[in-house]
Length: 447
Image (cartoon, rainbow, N blue to C red; front, side, top):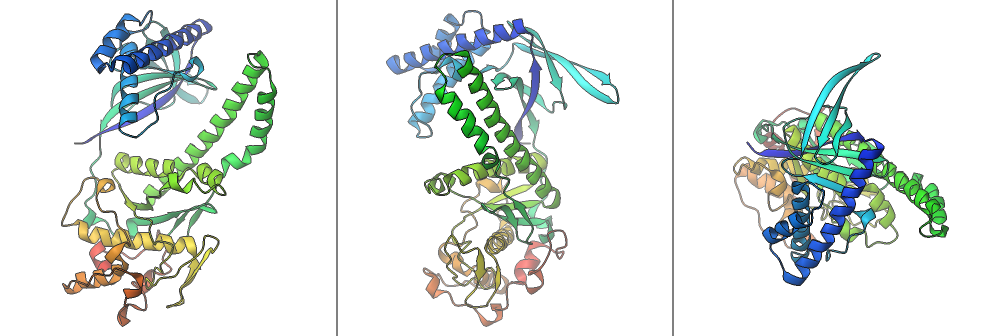
């Protein structure tokens, strides 16, 4: 079985003395990070050399926590040399916020406490060099605990348990009916639109709190540096940003849970968000939507729940008609799709979602002969590029046992007469919860 790493986050309630000790350890580990960083720059030391040096300068911190700092420095330089990150900077004390215990140095002790009509699991987390810290276990741990990270955030302290558990078995693709397949399109006006027309409004949490953030940011910038007033304003500002981030994360978790409750296969466009943020007119709205975070969550939840997540190449999904696959170019401001060939008219996002779902169903028909455990890593992605302009003709050739000619331009696409009426007429107004039964092969055979 493949192991899945899950993180469980719990609130800590340390005493004033324990909080002082933890703040002191963070300062010590921050200084140790900067020492190891300089050592890496000057002598290009290996990981083992950095760990030995960390043990010499660890002072009153646990040995495992000190060695983890060496691993962080080594990973930072590795990511830089492989082009995944910028050059590691000198750490400031207020920027170093976590202590990680990879193997030992912690112990969890919990007990059940009844408070009125509620039953809570309250416990103590023993941390080496700190003592027993009160922890609120709002849900039980699942799997084997691998590491524990004590983290300081704007509103308090938290303990993050990284646990290892077995990945649940997945249902074979050929046993999944089309009614359990969902394709979606991400957008700004509607955060998510499904092929059946249902949608989720964009919450715009950052836009809602923008005025409050502006007021606090203005007062913070005018406050005298080093003053207690500036420090208090910084904490208030950090709490507002933390609240926005948690609202966004909670909304995405709820949407993903609803999607996987009604579908076994979920497909979304693999968007290049980093390139899309270069549009300065929409950068703030795109960042507020957090599409990349939503896609990562959907991919991870698929592994945890034993579902399938299939990323789809976004090329052409908004420029073709889902019914006849004719070229129907649109500007960004055009929110309605009107096909110049078949006359199909529907919202632009729904048209893209239908194309995504069609590509998933077609991919599933080919996936029986090449079983994959993780469709996320399969290459190439389901796409309309190149000869995929003739997705319907490929499906027709699959049914007839023929091979279609290669197409290199949209102008070369010739739609057969029997495909003009759509790839499945009865699916045009279907609902996600009321789709026709049958296997993926049955759907493809009807294309």
